[in-house]
Image (tube, rainbow, N blue to C red; front, side, top):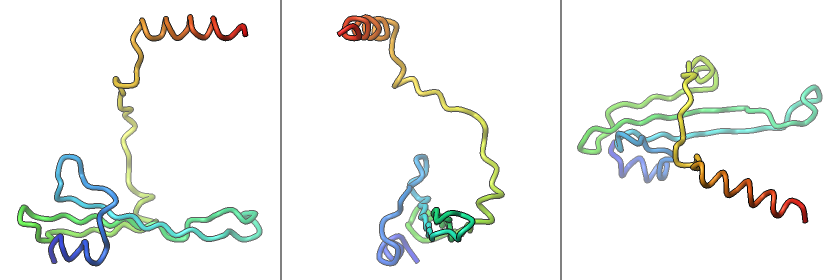
Length: 106
């Protein structure tokens, strides 16, 4: 199987690895209505993740399917990513506070 075959069967991947364009990830999530004790809230019936890895020629090298139970056992890091793009400079914050004070009294 190659990339073209996968696209014909599953369509374009929901996620491609940022560092390696040859790793594709597909998600499947099925929700159903809960029983009386769940008060009709949605309950995750199936939550599957398919990870496909291709070689440099586009041929499928590895496939991993994670179901709901396996996803619960995955350990995630506790590190927080700093986002410097959305942080405002001192001048921007100062001008924003003045603007808030000016228009807040109206």
